[in-house]
Image (cartoon, rainbow, N blue to C red; front, top):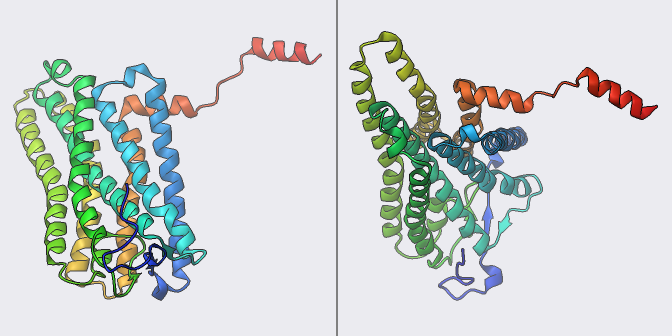
Length: 331
């Protein structure tokens, strides 16, 4: 990502940075918040890397369904990596100054992977839709190649959705305060500091947010409406419950992602949380918690994946023959 090194008002490149200011009113709770986020980040890395390792080491899992799951794991790792590591030097070592390029680069990637989270969940809904509504044709409709092309298409779509508003914000003139009242270089708090009329930026940001949140969510709801209709036509109660059970894992991921984010936006929109620092903390946790929970829930709910994970984490047993050989070598 190459953003202009100078802003529109002609200031020097060395004076184009921003100061991130947040959590000051939380007092000592700020330290607990940062510690919690670091723990969340380390758990996110561990759980998702284990999931990816299991996928790569087991050819039986290399199918369209788990290809979509691995895409979500990559997005989860990337989203947390863009947000949390940057917060440690800012709020632990008081290095709150970030350069112009760093700020807008983080803005792009943070919103990019946040949007990919929604589309990745919609991709899993598509997989379940095809698997349940067209079970006999599933191997022909949903191949690894086709799933890979869909994933590439989604990444390209989200790139196009994000590059324009971020580039537009980077070309604004920032001649007033450079203090960003947020823990990250979010789009809204940054462009609000610009001089001149930013009404178009606001409308664009609102439209884009509605598209990337409600678009995938609408697709997920419609997909499961078709799934429910198809399942209810199954005569066997046992097969009907089995079909529903395969969807419960994905529905759990959808609820874990959308419910906290929607609640956070409702709290902010209705101003039910008066402290801006507290609201920022709630929003940050609501965004970074799902990437940690996604692989845990998927591993626990999916029997095939659970067995592979336990096999990977289980220490190999030493056979008696190997013990005798090691004893002979030591003598």
